[in-house]
Amino acid sequence: MRSKLGADLYRLGVAVAGIAVLAAIAPGLPGGGGAWVAAAAFALAGLASLQFPLSLSLTNRVTVASSVFFAALLVLPPALAALVAGSAFALDSAVSVTRRIRSPQPRPPAMVIGLALCFNSAVAVLSVSIPALLFPGARIASVAQHGWAWTLASAAAAGILMYLLNLTLIGIAVALRTGNRPLHAIAVSMRPVRMEFAALYTLGLVAGIGLQVAPWAVLALVPVVVGLHSLLERAVRLRRETIAAVERMADLVDRRDPYTADHSRRVAQYVVAIATELGMPPSDVDQLRLAATVHDIGKIEVPDEILLKDGRLTPAEKAVMDQHPRAGYELLRQFSEYARVRELVLTHHERYDGKGYPSRIRASALPLIAQVIPVADSLDAMTSARPYRAALSWSVALGELRRGRGSQWHPGVVDAALKVFGGRAAAEPQAA
Image (cartoon, rainbow, N blue to C red; front, side, top):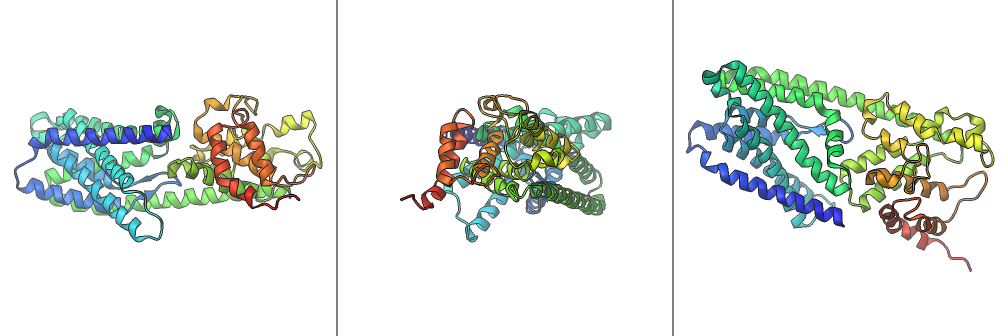
């Protein structure tokens, strides 16, 4: 796939850039002494933090490693701070690979593993080294020369740049792999975790000051770290409970109509299978599953006499039904957990040729992730019984997908669905 090749070439380029930058600044590494002891401590702390990520939502995770590497940037020479971050990510990738090899799941090819390891390490190196080089006044040791005001301002600028570099480098890789616009991918990734990262970088600043001014005072940060972890975990529980409640509401909406009971759950299963076949990253697969599970929640506003009508809808009734994607979008706006997926709910009945609803926009202009639910939703609708017709066979339903390929549905998504579900059609009994 062209998108996969472009993403791999980009990740290879970032890996080469990270190695080049590290080689260029290597002469700045200290010859020995306490700096290397501190670097080893930072690397071990960063590795330990990476092993225990905080799941802020279904698709977003952060670790206290952000605090560790930012503190290293403020305390260590740029080359040594970059080496700390890069080596910690390399070791973390090695640990992950070891776990994957020992697990019963099939492991990816060695080249895929190596590219991921080099890319992740290079992102860490670039995210730390560039801010450290551009803002040398951010080092706490420069307080004596520049004063606290200048040092803190430089540290804030370095922290913001470190955060944005990390998001940008990863966001471009995701955008290339999924067909999304890079700026959109970066903005979407940034939105749910801004406050958490602000807290983590502030903690890194305090730790850096403590290590430089009074090394033993950093022990006082232990209860702060524990408290921050506790608050984040509490937020995780609240978000999970919210998601469970909304999904339960969507399930009840499905069950209002006996013909659509469990419809959304089946659509969620189909989108996961199709998105996986398309090679989408796990975060996008999770977003699609989350959106598909509640994609029809807007039908809660559709009157029973329309939703449960035993027959085809009149034009006026269809106009009411056609507003359920927008109603679902508006309902989900109340929940921050659905900030990244409510657009998928709004557009799940738009067509590739612009003849869908509620907005009649050309779905071909939408990112690839927005093209998956329409195919999965149509598949389940065709293979389920309706008051006005029996369920279609899988072979007939897949034939309909072929006919609508490039007009009603995205060609690539249709191809993926045909590949995933072709076996179901082949397994059906053939007519005599």
